[in-house]
Image 1 (tube, helix red, strand yellow):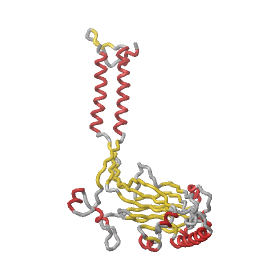
Image 2 (tube, rainbow, N blue to C red):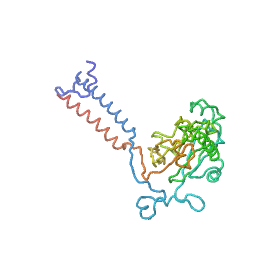
Image 3 (spheres, rainbow, N blue to C red):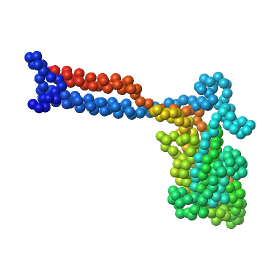
Image 4 (tube, rainbow, N blue to C red):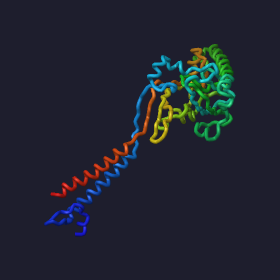
Length: 343
């Protein structure tokens, strides 16, 4: 009869309350159920629910879409540069670049942004914005190719870009590319005289025909635009592109769509970041030569900003709702058990 002491629902017998084993079992079950439901309710209260909303991206100078429409200004006009080269109505974002070319020396590479390369690039972004150096051991291990540090080059740095579409990349230096073309055309002429089947392909025969052993195989350690969204996959981090054609040349063209995102974590400030979507394709050197393209072999990034903005927020149940649910759980369980125990 000792278990009868757990009975919370004593039975009245001749004006007295008695405790029974059946009532004790029902009470223990009720307490267990209440405890489990209590823990589940506490867990649900502290668990964050993430909600995503899609809206039109509005420049920061306008507080609402209505204000933008009332201004009668096209959004693209709000992002132009002023006469001093400053961004008039939109703060620039910082672009971080870290790429390794294991088969091309630094002296044969160049970086460009919106058509500006060499000295023009350094005048636009500063002399120390991007550095060219020999890759270290860790970078070579990531490339996972049989090469020496002195035969390759790592390009690393950061520079500001406006919030409008543009392009940047790393390519073979123009002087080196002209030397390659001259050697390739010379050997193509020789093959033509010998009635070679590949007479009309200036890059047939590989590096021995182009004069230098260039190969634009590269490893993208990271390409970041401002704050990259931490909750989504980063398609421009730790990416290896191995060029296996006969000449080792070509253009790795990467199109980037940047999706503005406002991320609001619970009890924290809103953080502006970007989600990234990319598409890739590779252009062979024979295609460049046949179209008389001015694009140099290497890697080219073309980026654009979507007019839509994602707003992501962490939310959780209010405390009063949590308290009301908790009371209803406890009260409901005990009322139900009392009804059952009354039979």
